Length: 345
Ligand code: NAD
Ligand code: UFG
Image (cartoon, rainbow, N blue to C red; front, side, top):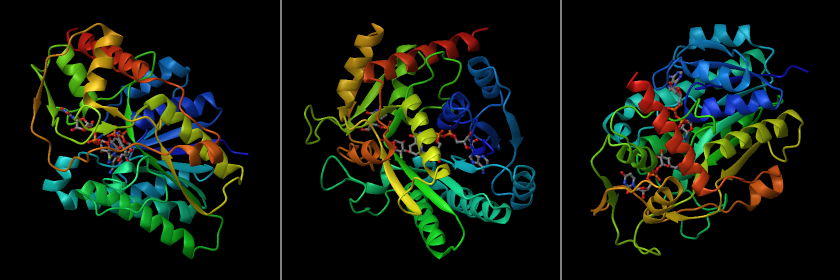
């Protein structure tokens, strides 16, 4: 049986870590990415970790013709893990059509190519943003979806809907697992691959590590008047390596026909909620570096608290996280120091 897997967005943050785990599990990933938010050097990092030079195609998923050619070249693949998407929430508010064209137009092109060459197994990157502020915590997969706070969030809801409806209409062997990630952070333990935020980071952890290394003067904590343990917002931070491994488990499930429905959804989180202040203190403890931070007003669009009910993933996939918040933060810090040393060469 072929072990080839097409990984769209495979030079990105989560994609690159997943490629490493796919290789460790005996799969042969081939990457397609347009490098709009990643760098080709990521392939060297993957090679340093795995010893494997991964086949790469610089393709834009909006380009149906180029995509079709790529899929015909790799029609022996047994599945697609579809990461390629734009993901900056703020940018999506200013450029909604860019996000719909890329994330929705691109997804439709991917589905069409898969059908054309007969690749049946699809793993889709979704997000816990689809739940908005859940009425009940921890949030299960059956919780109602809330109207999206941004065009980006909407592309994940619409993306799931398109996949669900397409699968329901089909008589072939097509099947999909949508994975709703909570807050992926950290980097590979080797620091050969990690997250590459462009410009001023929007997300907490890159802002924390950039402040700690002196690139930013001060971390702003957005709000301490939430109804949470210390007033700051609560999230479920998950190590990107644990998250990457879940993709291998999900792919195995489809390849081995272990899925119970043609369209399945899983939460991927630790089940543990941590506040912003807890993250700051855990970072200081695990790295020994003091952080300069100040509490400011809430950020528009933020939810108060969200964390995953992980029992469905645990029971059905047999997957759960292994790495602690301290390990997530220590690996993010190691990666930040590596980036800084590369810059000063
Ligand atoms: P990332 O930006 O690091 O990786 C995405 C990759 O897709 C990049 O390498 C980019 O160049 C590529 N890409 C974007 N548009 C493309 C196009 N038109 N054609 C080809 N390649 C294209 O982001 P990530 O954090 O690794 O996220 C991966 C997926 O997970 C995305 O779908 C994202 O929406 C989803 N997700 C991420 C988070 C998170 O917090 N990081 C949370 C929930 C869901
Ligand atoms: N925060 C700060 N200061 C900062 C940055 C963030 O206090 O400089 C706070 C936020 O207010 C929030 C928490 O840290 O309470 C986490 O914020 P992030 O921006 O890191 O993450 P979000 O939960 O807002 O959203 C992220 C991604 C989304 C994704 C979502 C769920 O940005 O794309 O996780 O996976 F959909």
